[in-house]
Image (cartoon, rainbow, N blue to C red; front, side, top):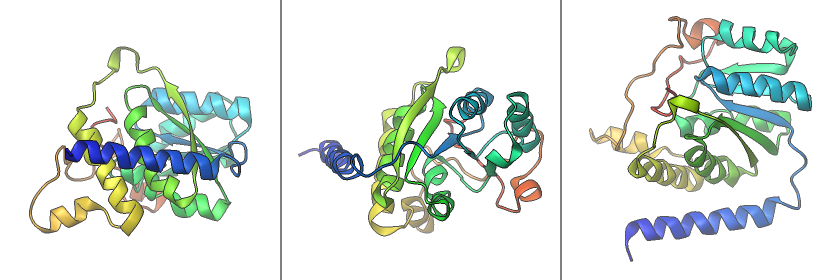
Amino acid sequence: MKPLSVVLMVCAALGLAGALLLAPMAPKPQLILVLGGVSSREAAAARLSGQRNLPVLVSGGSNPAYVRWIFQQEGIDEGQLALDYTARDTLGNFITVLPELKRRGIRHVLLVTTTDHMPRALLVGRISAGSRGIRFTPHAVDCGDHCWVEPPLKIWTDVVRALVWAVSKQDLRNWVGGSGLRLPFETGQPQRPPGGVSGDQHQGKQALSQDPAVR
């Protein structure tokens, strides 16, 4: 059997198991998680927060001052908004916020990202954070004229990384990096948010970096 077929079967099994286990237990959505860095995602999350009266956690967002301005324009209280610039990529978007989700008792999340990024993000999130009891409901934002077709190799690289993390709490990228190799579509060093303001300066956390999905 081809390796890709094995991965597909494992993902399907995990997805089915997660749906069966979480569906009867998960409450209504309790929080909006935005995979940030694209202003349309953050604006959509602000509107959604106003409609549903839900708190928002932005992982890897745009310039912090700009994100706060977007939410202010929608009349969202600053206390409803949390920014996290720890993540280095899509897998990191999920695993770095797990402690905060656990602290808040969150078990059901509305996931906001663009339509081109959502399939990979949802797979990665349901495997990684889903293995820790978090359910995700997608809320996709139209990518408009800025859509990007994600290479299958990148999708499956991230799926494998999520699977490894789910069973070991280790990032395959760190293992590979320690050997001097690089995973496909490795994104390199962290980038600062637009405007040159680091996450360290605003959040007391690591600086933001984004994977190619955050364009």
